[in-house]
Image (cartoon, rainbow, N blue to C red; front, side, top):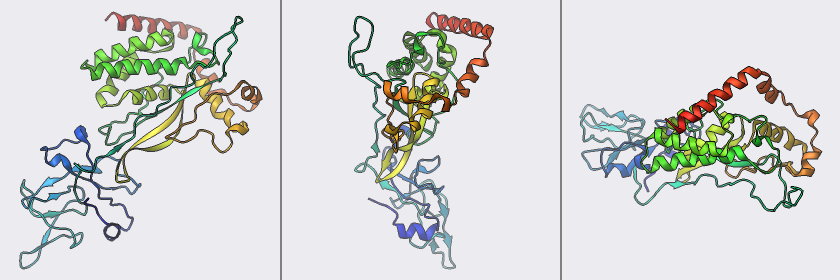
Length: 374
C-alpha cells in the first residue's frame, strides 16, 4: 500500500487535512486508460475527516518515469541555479514529468494501485418494516402484536463519490400526501405509503437497469406506485419527473424511495454514516432515516418517543441501524397529546380549501390516466 504518513500530513498542513489514500470507483470517475483506472488518490481538503466531497478524489496522471502523480494539490517544481528541481511543499515529494507534457510537478498526495485493495461498500439498509405476525378474529381484531405508526429504516446518499456527486437526498417538493379520508390514514399496523413508494421505486429502478429509458422506467414506477397508494394521495406527474431526474443522476432504489418520502415530510433523519470506505477512510456518506406512512405519524413519533421510558437513552437507534418500530397500544395510550404540537400537520389541512382539494384530486387523477395511457 502507498500512503502518506501522519507525520508528513501534519508537516504539510497544520490542520491535519491531507489524507492521501487510494480508491477504486469504477465508472464514478472518468479514466484515460485501464491502467490508470487503478491508480487514483484522494485528500481531505476541507478537514472534515473524510474524502467524500467533490474534487477530493482524482485519477492519477502517468509520468515519463513510470510512476504516478496525484493531481490533487499538484504544484510545479522549482529549479535552482544548477537546474535541479525540488518540490515547494517538501523535499520528500518527488518531482515528475507528466506524460502529457509540461514542467516537472509534485503533489503531497500519493497514488496507489487498488487492484488488491478494493473499496468496502455498505449495502442499503434492509428494513422491511413491521411484518404481520397474527391473523384476525371474527370481529376484525388483530391476534398478533400491534404497532401504531410503524416506520421503516432507510437511507439516502448526499453528493459523493458513489453517486457521481449527485445529491440523492435532494428535496423535490411534496409528492406524496397523507391522504386524509383515504384508507391509508389508519393508525394501525400497516405502512401503506412507505411500502407503496418502495414498490414504485423498485419497479422504476429495475426497469432502468434492464435497459428502459428514464422516462419508460419512471412510468413503470408510477404505475406500480399507484397500485399501492390511493391515486388521489400522490402527484403522479411530479413523481414521474422526480424518478427521471434521480435515475439519470445515478441514484439507486432506496435513494429515490427515501428522498420522495423525506421531501413529503414523512421521515425523521437520524444522522449520517459511511457507506463507502478505503482503509478506514470514508469516501461516501449516507443519511439514515425512519420513514412513516404519514406526516402525522412522523410528528407523533418525534414528540411521543421522548415521553416514554422505553425509548429513554435510545430514541432512534443509530443512522446505520435505525429503530423505527411503532408504539404498542399501551405506549400509545400513555402519550400526553396535550404536549404534542400538531401545528405542522394542521397547517397542511388549513391551507387547503375544499375547492382546492377537489381541483388537486382531479389533476392527479388526470395525471394518472395520462401516465397509464400516454
